[in-house]
Image 1 (cartoon, rainbow, N blue to C red):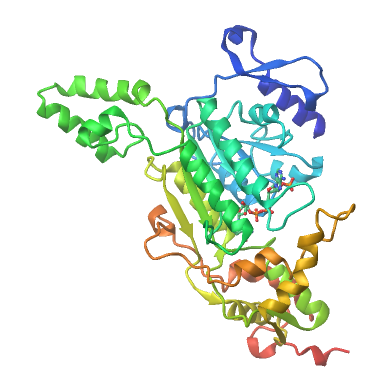
Image 2 (cartoon, helix red, strand yellow):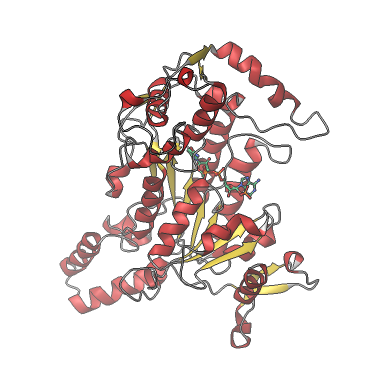
Length: 454
Ligand SMILES: NC(=O)c1ccc[n+]([C@@H]2O[C@H](COP(=O)([O-])OP(=O)(O)OC[C@H]3O[C@@H](n4cnc5c(N)ncnc54)[C@H](OP(=O)(O)O)[C@@H]3O)[C@@H](O)[C@H]2O)c1
């Protein structure tokens, strides 16, 4: 697989002899491919989703026209985004920095040659350019809920996002940029990660603002990437000026092709805490509750959250890519259909794993005191510290305020998606934590008391 991915990565960057005149503005270092000389990637990235040839019925073996570089594809949300992209016949470039195993599960999601892992170094601009060279869509899922010795919240969530946005803009062929941030990200958040995420969002929207074309400004409609209705209004405007229909259509096509000089547009998705088989909230809780027979609840468990099924978030990203351009330049807040308090969500988890809930409520000051040493020492000791589990200082800070979708925000509804309720299939994975085996008990009254087992 290593050999294949290297070969694919290498080939996709090698300009064909006939295209040598289109040498890229991006000289690529072969640092990651074992060669010393500089090489050039073709900048002939296909010109956008709407301009590519679509073939087939829309299934895995068709051609959707999307060639997407998905940064952070190796993570939790990444696998669902790659799966949904591949399912509609898109080619997915998977930049990875870790071992060759980190992307193995993704290869199976697409037809042969559709999922292309490419080794990259997030601190090397040329290597980022290399993994974007052939794409027409960039999706940024990079993020981490804790700091490491190597990456601060700011560098990861702000610096790296800004860099990706700048490179995408410079690329010229990236038609859509989807930035995944977090619900609650704001400059005034008590959490450093959420503040950095907010700065990242701002950078993306600043680099790729919702610029209006000349015609949009003059006629109040948006020919490029606009809806069919907007195009009809555009033609109507021209017919008022007594321009024949054929000429109007021709003009529209020319405008679409040439006049919109800065077509890259960003969409920001702000999911709430995500739930799914590999999630980092219910799995952590279930694991802790099973191991220690109790669960610490930060604060008094009354903070409101609006957890969302991870598959719905991936579907929202795909819906934004497939729309007529109406999601460009917009920010969506993606919360599930129900608001829970932290304790209610923990109760739901206990119901599914059939354990009696036993909570130890940890007031915020004590929780912070327990979590502070790691946060303070992270860069002061010469060895890595354990990854924070329940007591993550930044998460504790974030939990001091409610995190729900705001009243006037654009949501799933605006993308034509009805999010799933958590109870049922989305949390069924928790049955593997049942003491009596996954099939144990069929009703909540059959929950197992920890005392009933020696
Ligand atoms: N999980 C949630 O509940 C939740 C809720 C709201 C928003 N979000 C946001 O949604 C996005 C995806 O979340 P997720 O749960 O899928 O995250 P995840 O499972 O932690 O995956 C994060 C991805 O980012 C990559 N990454 C982390 N640090 C990196 C670094 N220094 N350089 C390059 N890549 C790096 C990881 O690559 P490696 O595999 O190489 O480490 C991984 O592919 C993130 O932006 C997150 O902040 C998540």
